[in-house]
Each structure stands twice: as C-alpha cells, then as structure tokens.
Image: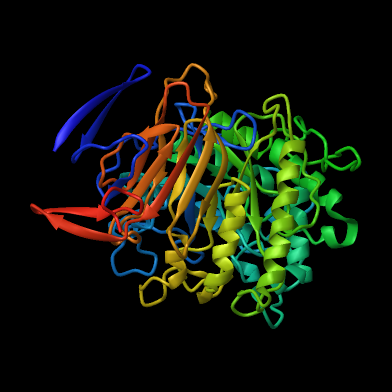
Length: 566
C-alpha cells in the first residue's frame, strides 16, 4: 500500500492507493473501501437546476424515504420495536449506494397537544391566537431521538432531508400529520370510503379540515403553530452539516382544486410558503395573489431560513403536479430553494399501487418531468435568477422492476436527483407492502438492486449526460470542464462517482476516462476523477470486469480491452 499526496488547487488530498492507476487506461476495483474525497457539508442552490457543494461541484443525490406514520411518529434506535432504525439499516443503505434519506417527521409527534378535534378553543371562528398546545419538553424529546437517526446516517456519509409528512391531513381522518387538536371539520364526522386510502381526500370532513388550515381562519392559528414548530426544528438542526434541508409540507392538497381550479389553491399555497408580506406571482397568467386575511405575514419558508440560514428548503407544488398537470406555483424571492416534485403514474392498482400499464405510465412520467423542468426555469427570482434547483423526492412506490428501471433512466436523462418511496413498510395507514424496498421479513426486494446504481455524486464541471444500464452495469458520464462553478472562489475538487461494489461488480469494475484521470484507489466504492490539463470535456466509462485472477495473493480484475484481455 502506498500513499500519494496530491495538491489540487490548494486543497491537500490524501489518496491510499493499492498499486498505480494509469490515467485514461483501464483501471479496476474489486472491493469497497473507505470513501476518499467524500461529499460532505452544506449544499447550496444559487440558481439553475443543480445543487452544489462547497467546492462548486454539481451534486446529484440518490436515496429513499423513511417515514413512520404511527406513534411515536419517527424512527430511531429502539431494538425490538417496529420503529427501530439501527446502525445495520444505515449501513445497508450505504451498501446500496444511497447518500440521502428523506426522513419523516410528523406534526402530531412534535406538538400532540391535549385538546380533541373540533374543540371550540381552536376551531371557533375568530382572530387566530395561541391554542397553548405546544409543550417544549415533548418537542425536544422527539428531536433528541430524531438526532440519533440523523447521526447514524451521517456516520455512513448519508444526508438527511427532514420531511414534515402528511397524508389526508391527520390520523383523525385515517392518515397522518396534524394532531387531533388541529383538526377542524365543523362537526362533520370523518368517513372512510372503500378502496384505496387516498379516496379519503374526497370526503367532506377532509375538505373542511384542509380548508381551515390553508385559510388559517380559526382561533387556533393553525398555520402559525405549524410554522412555530418548524422554526424550532430548524433551529435544533441549524448547525448539523448532515441535515441538507427541510421539506415544509408533503403533497399539499385542497379539494378546492376540483371546484375552483389549481390557480386558486396554488395562490393559497404560495401564501403559506412565503407569508402575506412576501408573495410573488403565479405562473401561466393566473390572477394576482390575494392571501387569506388571517395568513401569517411571515410564511414557513422565511421562518425556516431565519432559524437555519444556509439550509435548503424543498418546496412542493400541489399534489396534482405529481402527474403531467399544470401547476401555477410561481417565483418566491428567497435563496436556497429547491423545486421539490413527486412523479407518480395515474395508471395504478388501487390496492398495491403498482402500474397497470407500464408503457402508459412511463409516457405520462416523461411528460411530467418535462413540464416540471419548464416550471423550474419559470420560477426565477432575484434570489435565484436562473430559477431554483429541482429534485424528485418521491417516485416509484412499486414492486415492478421493469417499470422502475425505465423510470430511473428517465430521471437520469433529465439530470435530476431522486429519492425512492419507500425504504420499509411500517404497517402504514396510507400505503401498501408493494411500495417498500424491504419486505416485512427484512429481506430486500429485487427492486432494491435496480436502484443500486453507479452514479455521479459530485461533478467538477457541467454535466451533459449520464446513464446506467441495469442489465450490463455499464455507466457513462459526460461533463464539460468549467472554471469556475458557484461558489466561484472555491478550490477545485475531483468528480466523484458512487460505485455500489457491495451489490454489483462481482469481479470488480473497470474505468476508462477521456479528458481526465483516476485519482482514487483501485478498490474504491467512491471513484474520483480529475480533468486533464487543458481538457474541455471529460467522459467516464465504468464497466464490469469479466473475471478475477489471483496472483501472489492479489485479486486482479480482467477488463475488456485491457492488455491481455480475451
């Protein structure tokens, strides 16, 4: 074992190398090693479609959703309990190559309160005020357990995106999210129509409960309390470099979309995000925004950014934007925003959620990605003149591997990062066992292997294309060398490619680089590439080795096209 010390634009980098690596030639790797040049620290969204790290590299994140929708409404290390999330699960995620988890937090867990639904102290008409349901000790106990999970993931170099999750508003209505005290249905009793859980969205009780939240027109100040809780969460994690940011509200819904059109609800949604004092405009010629009279002047986005400066905020459009429908959510003049989209097909089994027509699903999702990509650019503001970055934080929810392979290829073609729904089925009130990568028995589904892909995690340039063939494991990355990406004064750092050697490449993998050279050890699960002097573009090819030979106790992969290869 030799140690090479490289000086890359004033950044000192140690490289542990087993033998030499020839730039531009066929290099090989056989086993995972401790990552070198690993991605870490805060990420930024200065404008344009991409996220960036502190070196100005374009960052692509691949990961999964982990959400526990029943009490205690979070996962953390607690052996023997259904919500247990221990070191073994974090290691398993990293072995699959994942570098981010969208980790669910639930309003009911943070602020459970003591009042029942429809209590007049909360739900009566009147000027919004403090309902006195927040208990700081309960909230901090919840966050202490949450931090255990964040720390477990961080030890595996996995980022956390904190997601305030809800489905059909709250547990009182058969889903999860709002605590009972924050459920105001004007006395209408919740009903549970037959069929898929999402049918509850169409019930009168759900319509009324959502409406009171978005209009913030009851004495309990629902949005104000929601924002206050989020501010405490953000402040708790403000200095944690492994919390990449916050997803303020999962899949915003209102039945008014069906009655009055998307532009009506999207105006309410933008008021919720920005606050009445900071609203911008809607897209596609929608009328000017008029916020509900009792909305907070400062919305959830500025609350988050004030309490955790520098974190990313992943704002979602309305729930119908997960298909190819238009959305009117417009520019919001705040830094570090990420346009956070979900991509789901409408042709799905009402019980399992699996696609009933794979070809139709893929066609619909391609159109949805095209439309959301256009939305992103049109959301430009003074703070992000090229529009916010974008990200797919939910897709999949299926045990259909054929569909999943092509869905991931679509996102690669759009150069967008993603997170699969979901990691594990926790007897979800709003879901099915077919959605999870981990079966009830604890074994991985075949779909987990589909998602264990080689991908560019950090690119020292402008990526132009990337692809991964799940059948051959061939990976290709092309990027333009650019000096200098934001932040412009940052020193250079190598391009990083995640190679899931614990799952793929039984005989090792082979690398060919045009326009650059390999820096990382030959056995690395994190491939590092630097561009050559004067190069304008770089192409990286990763292929599976054909065989492994053993000579003098060392395993040597046989690379196609290499000297002596068949």
